[in-house]
Amino acid sequence: MFYLLNTIGVVLLLYVAVCIVYFFIQEKFIFVPTLLGEPFESKLTTPTEEYLIDTPNKGKIHGLLLKVDQPKGLIFYLHGNTGSLKRWQFMAEELSLLGYDVFVLDYRGYGRSKGRRSEAILHRDHEYCYDLISAKYEGLQKVIYGRSLGSGFAVRLASRRSPDKLVLETPYFNFLSLAQWYLPYLPVKYLLRYRMQSHIYLQHVHCPIHIFHGNADIIVPYSSALNLYKHAVEHGKQVQMTTLVGGKHSNLNIFPLFHEKLTEFLA
Image (tube, rainbow, N blue to C red):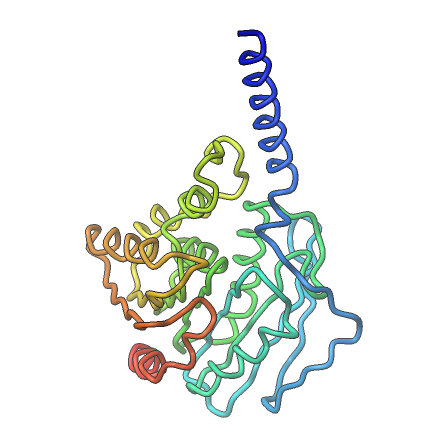
C-alpha cells in the first residue's frame, strides 16, 4: 500500500511539474520567431515601403507595404506563428498579384518588431497599425487576411473595425480548443494565456468571410475550421468555405482552386 501511495504521489508531482513548466514556457510553442538584422533588405521585385511603427504599450512594429499600380484597395495580412518578414514578404507579394496593395507586419519579438507581448497588447498593435495604414485607402476596398495563428487576430480585428472582406486561411475555432487538441491530458483551460476566441469575435463581424482549409492539415485540424464555418452559418454570417482536398497546412497556394476562389472572392 505504501509503495502504491508513493508511486501515485510521484506521478502527481510529475504531472504538476509538467503543468508548471508548460505555463511558463507556453509562448515558446505559440510564437516561433526569427530575428532580422538592420537594415532589412527586401528580396521582392514589387515596390515596397518599410515601416517601423511606434504603437501603444512601448511597441515597435516592423511592416512592409507592397505597392501596385492603381490598387483596388488594401490587404492587411496577419501571418502565421513561424519566421518573420524574411519569409512572409513572399506570400504578401503573391497576394499583391491580385491587384491590391498588401501590408504585412511582424508581431512583437519577430524580425525587427519589439516590445512586451500579451494577447491584449497584440490586438491593440493590430488595431493601431490597421488604422494608420487603412487611412491611406479611403474609398477603396479593405481586406483583412489572417493565416493560421494570425486568423484569430484577424477575426478580432474585423470585429472591431469595418473591413469590406475577411479571409481566413487554415483558421481554428478558438485557440483554447486547438491547445486542448494538442495537449488533451493537461488542464490547458487553466494554464493557457492566449485564447484568441475566434468563434466569439466572428459574431461581431459584418462583412463577407471566406475560409480556406486543407483536409490533410495536421497542424490545425480541418474539423476546427469546419466548426468555425458552421458557427458562422448558425449566426447568419455571409460566409463561404473552400476545402482543398489533400491540402496541408502550408501548401494551399499550390492548389489552382485556392487561387480561383480567392480571386473570385476579392473581385
